[in-house]
Length: 322
Image (tube, rainbow, N blue to C red; front, side):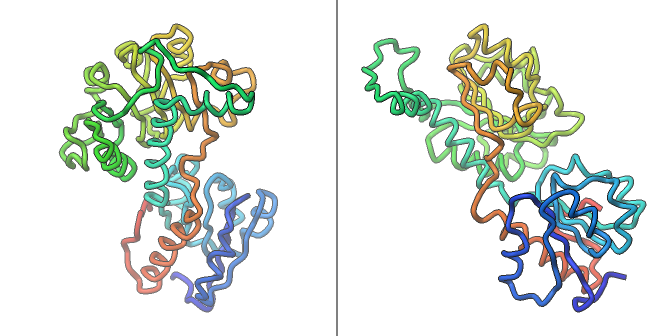
């Protein structure tokens, strides 16, 4: 049985997000506490009926979580959760899917515009107090994105919003998703994952916006990078391991594509000795695409909806995994 409202205790576990503070503003009357680090979470998880967490979650916490009934992930990514172990423990599990879809799509567009308009270079020049002259070489001058073709790999919530933004900028949007029968989701055309290498040569911009799964790991590999236009831009706001990072580095070193904009890398933080740091045609943000001032409230909206469903005895939850 799921505990009644007056008997429920929620543990919010995150090193930075102000989850409990934002939850308290809802005045639900539900008891809660925040664990700011892994040691604190381990020490107090036995008090919790509900855990709201993401990267701080470890599956070996389960034996210590005797009261646990429901885990609400803060993130859309669910790789850290063992569905087998959590399911055996009889714990419900829901993702944070959709909480940052708008933010990630906007970030992808920001990366595209920044690279097209050479904004990272302009910022560097500003710090040097250097006024760069106009560029005569048409292949390296600032560019427009209107009229370009953007290939979006992953047409879920992020891909759907990215398609809308792309079309608002006058781009043609070609989408790829696991099941094309689910619809275009805003793209001009939709295709299966197996068509990636065939479609890449058409794209001026290739954006990864898919989940990391066994099927998508290394999806953007040797064949796909080799098929890109020399003038094309590669953007990754998905997960670092969706792209073969060694192949990406080799591609950038060889100058076979024009630019890359990365919010994610295979290992995070990116190793200090990675060549990506110093490549002039690579723009990196530190996995901040999903960061937004509304993040906590977006997660809490899902949490409260699911608590109401659990109190009513509903079997289906929002963003349900288990």
